[in-house]
Length: 176
Image 1 (cartoon, rainbow, N blue to C red):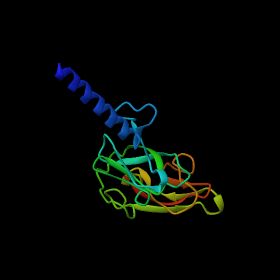
Image 2 (tube, rainbow, N blue to C red):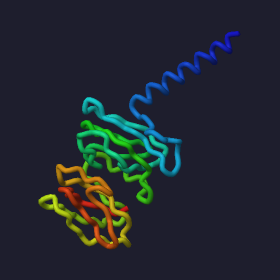
Image 3 (cartoon, one colour):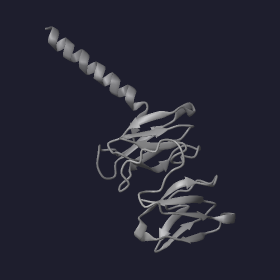
Image 4 (tube, rainbow, N blue to C red):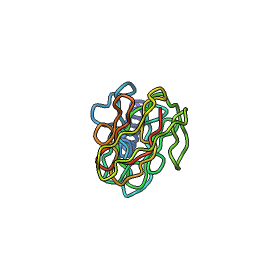
């Protein structure tokens, strides 16, 4: 009879441990485990550093949830299957394909394997285009330089061989 009770206690302990983990790393709506399109929500509350496990080796920010800017290398980074956030950064993260595990820790974000980067600035909130060599790969915000949040599809993007920025977005873009 002791075995069934022990099994129940183990299951309850595992459930409690899982509930404790979810307070730090909560799958975003629609998260269905590892695979294309999955996201993980990771939040720094009270400006404390948090670490959230992911099903992938490296991550990219897909949606910022906080008013504090989430800047890769400054307020968040990913390494070896974990996302680390701090200083109030809260966001949803997805797999960063094609750049492997950067493992660079805190510090300036580094471009992908090519070392190629372009700095582009929307001065006076106006649309500006900068040349982008698509052969180098897909751009990502390696370092945000403006107070205005740079969001792909809203304040920056790629059209043909041009990288465009608008509404005050100013950033250094690296290639994946």
